[in-house]
Image 1 (tube, rainbow, N blue to C red):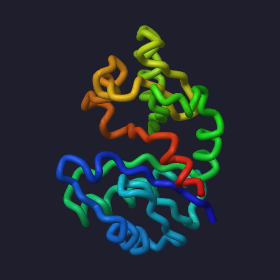
Image 2: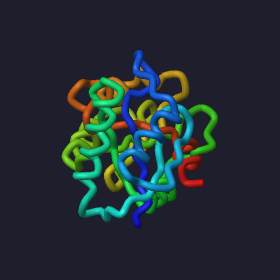
Image 3: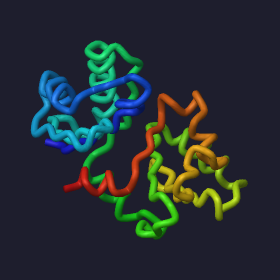
Image 4: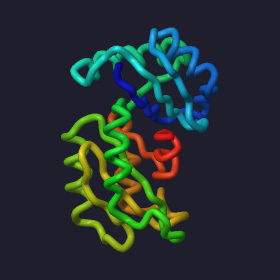
Length: 177
């Protein structure tokens, strides 16, 4: 059994509402176990008799079920709990800096992660502090300016919508509990 974390992109914003109980029901219908939803922002932890070699198939099953049940263009990033734990442990910035947001941008494709890292390399690190990680980009923008920073604008591009999702480090810590 592997413990997985599905990070749904774009739910409970822009008119796409998925209640935690409905998400849990959907997951149980996919024959997974120990389903726990965390916050109302599309985070679900569960167990499945699928190892990392079956990740792509499991991801597709979940996305297809979300599309069918909730009638929206669903995208998720699917990681193991161990991968999430390692990602949180490696956060390179001061997570307690009250002037900044501690974000992790998850990328379901390494080519996308590499493109984001390349794009961030030319940006002002005072405004857009970024560091690459395995399958992620760590990001620490100033509070209140997330969507306005150059890196925030890059992340908002349609080309990244199906392959990325961003979470606050505090949310990720809650998922690990």
